[in-house]
Image (cartoon, rainbow, N blue to C red; front, side, top):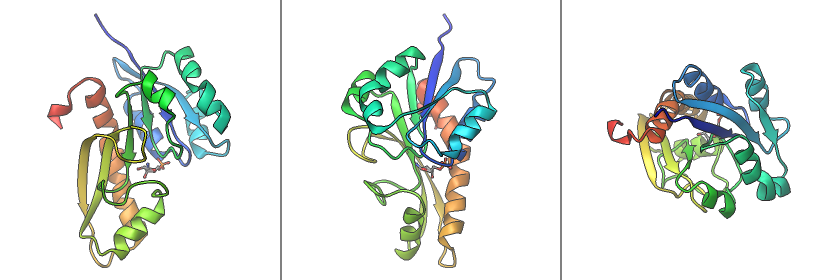
Length: 194
Ligand code: GRF
């Protein structure tokens, strides 16, 4: 029997990863992007979603904590993908989606992770700490920031002449190339082919 997997993407900002994911799954036989959830009514990700005809939901903190599980069941969501989403996932949602929520972090966890570690701050720190490499980490979401089981990491080189912007750009390219593929393997239980 064919199974259908219905994804919600949670994003707070630009949404360039969300768009890469939307494009990747556009013609997919069993995985569809059903909903974009944001905490930020100004987020560019909402414009991107509109372009692809994907419904969006903007929730404030109270709504997010009390209503999100119901909203997701209205859309029959089976998996959640975080792509630049800045709020912690409430325990009730973790319980409703056990091992069914993943996140991407733009560094090699456990380095440069945790509360407040997002955006350019990470790449600035990578540069000022004279790291020789950085990369991406895709991990299962639990009740803490950036601490769930690591599913996949991919490295790239950092050289001393790099600016934080150049590092960010290199990491973004890795994100676009790998996050959609790893989402697919994770959902279809094919992580061993990573
Ligand atoms: C990405 O670097 C992702 O790793 C992190 O937040 C950033 C989101 O960028 N979690 P965008 O909104 O997808 O452009």
